[in-house]
Image (cartoon, rainbow, N blue to C red; front, side, top):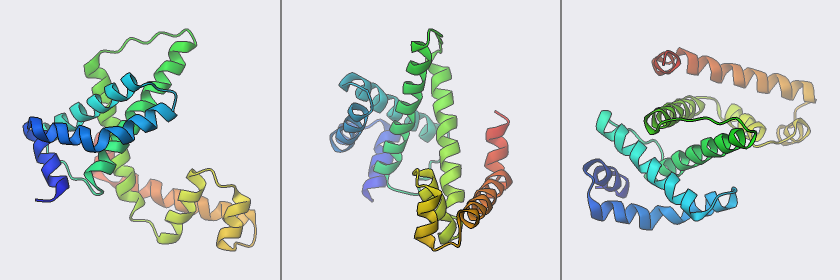
Length: 185
């Protein structure tokens, strides 16, 4: 059994020693991320705990297929949860108070994770060139730098390429049955 399968099965069954190993192996990385992004240790603990609950719920409700490693999947889940928490704090700080129950919050987090998984799955189907172009764009690379990286004739050509790649990705996502299910929730 691979480490990933070991962690997944341990989480599914609630095996205490495996849960402790998950904390020992992966919590530090999440803690560092949260601390670097306006959080404190208790925030990191909450995010990590909520991510494990979310994964446990998904494992109980259906088969969970992880395309990357368990660590990467768990870390992405934690990042998404922390981003949501930061967004809520930003809204709350602007004097708009939002009250959400835990079940609603978990449902939104699960939905967000499913959306992320669909995006990654379809992103991998793009050509290598499209993946590189979109990765640069999503990481904040300027069109001037994209032109230089790919030796495009101009920014117009770069913008056209980005548009074609985004259109292809959008089409792949929208044609997937999972998208219809997610969209109708």
